[in-house]
Image (cartoon, rainbow, N blue to C red; front, side):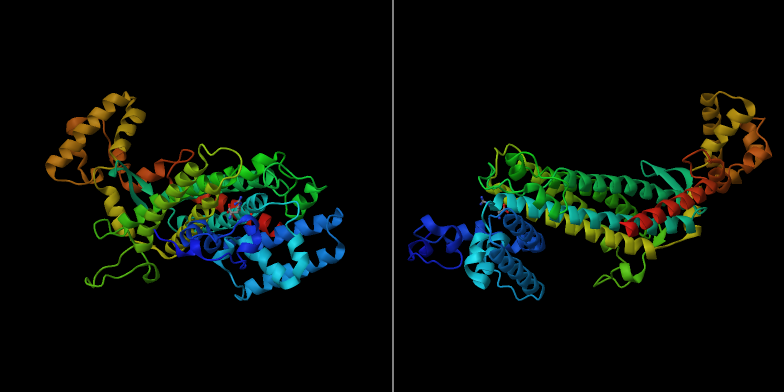
Length: 484
Ligand code: ARG
């Protein structure tokens, strides 16, 4: 590819003054295109400014910077923050990334003192610090969003504690369950997701602050890394400078937590897609959360649920891609690591969107009680209840009870009776004389779910107790948050 840029005369533009001392020619356009990360990492601006402010304060406290220079730097960085917030900052790709953009702007604004800010640090420790702080903050926000979805699910579970629906295995009708119980299953999954997200956040913080590792080996200046670590919300600095600039396991762990949670969301999303189809007819999404078809006027499509299914794949893929970036990368920093941010930001954005959309759908979804109940009675879903009665009332071995029940199901099928509780007692007794009217009464789907009151079971009494427990847990979580 011909590259006129390469032939152009040396140009000490804003881009070149940062590291261009030994270069005679500008980078090629394509070099700049592959190298520049500003379009992605401008999202780190707040962390970058906070990191620089802490670094400058430390340099001054250690006598490495004069008080006047430090004051100019602090004021300049604050002015730049205001400029970025106002959307007035002149971001440029020539300056590669957020670090050089801000530093160059600082020098433009305050002159000489701006050029002293980069003393005793490198972009390597700078970016590792900025990025870790960003991930920690994003994880805190993800925790809250998970909680919000849990709350929505718990309220729907409470409102449908005794609504009977089919429980499935192999997507075949298995046994009747309650809708509240089904929804609470996701509350449990989300609780473990929350724990993983909180753990990733905790580990990222506890692993310490990279700042002060400099390029890879530390620095000859008398810096105070404890000072900067604490100023940036860490308990301590990272102990090894190579580890500090080269490691991204905090981001990997975060993406792993997100990918697992997104997989859970995709299962609920898939169920919403099934439940709202005319074939199931179990549920209806509100107008706000349905889309129409441009050609078929009757359609109500669950697009948000479908997109959650798709985005779960993307989040998992980004985890995989970041593992690929880190895998076999020799110590310490290499530019491969710059790609960590696009992968991580995209995963967090997708995850936030998935949680918000799921919360919106769950808050406003409505269920069809009659359709759920009718489906629950299909497929002789209470056959296990008859087998259990034979065991409990007649002391029949379970294997034999299973066999007898199979014969009863066959009889009902032959007679064209779709529900065991509708089969006349006499028909049961042609197969097993000792079956009583009381046994048959237990075969309604309501009796069936009520009987499953074992710990963790689907009985409405259990569901109501669990809803109460979850309300308390989530209220406490709320209170903790306010306390923090
Ligand atoms: N933009 C870079 C990144 O995100 C900053 C670090 C650059 N360091 C370097 N040695 N080129 O990774």
